Amino acid sequence: MLAAAVCCGVAALYLFSILDAGQGRYRDLIWPTVGLAGLSACAAALAGGIWAHGRKRQVRLQATMLCIAGTALAAGSVFYGVLANCRLSQSTIVIDEKRSPDGSFIAVQLIKRCNALVGYCPTASLVRIVRPGEDARTGGTSVFESSDGGDDLILDWAANNFLRIYYSGNDRVTHSVQKAGNVSIKSLPGALRL
Image 1: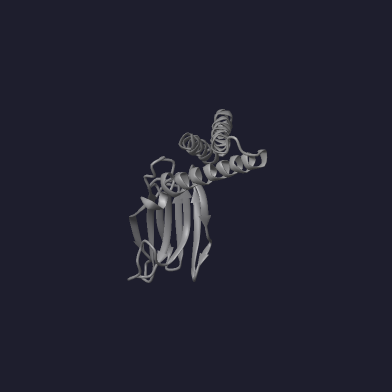
Image 2: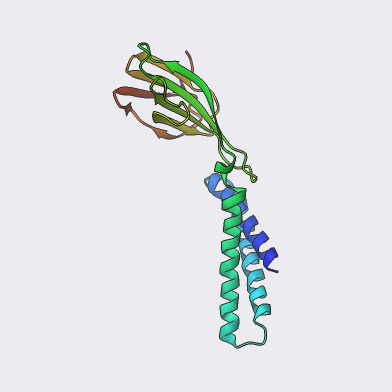
């Protein structure tokens, strides 16, 4: 009974993650999510009632609440710790590197991809500014990130300390800075034409 409760809880969390990632676009999933969460709670409550059968009402109530809390914790641990953990399978791929005209900086375009078991991890496009010799994947400063991104960024050094980042405009920018050290950065949406 508890295994069924945990399974329903994991399914409810999966649907909730789709709702959350979709930012309200999948409203038809609200009732199935609520239904699975309710089914999980009912199955846990039933397991608690069976476990404490024949005991005082207070003991049955405590057993029921303990089963519901344990089921929620187990479902959350399974979903977020294993199924939806993008970091377990994340890979960072260097797509492009552009040196500044004087060679003192390198603009690095990266793609972060993952294949979590539930398959909803978004791909992210990143731009980092690193110095020669620094690790392109982790070094330097992150200056731009977009989710839903592909490899359609264009990096253009207009001067030794001025970088332009062209992107499609359809990507959702989640991080963008205008200055990193003494390098100025300009992000230009919808301007993929170099």
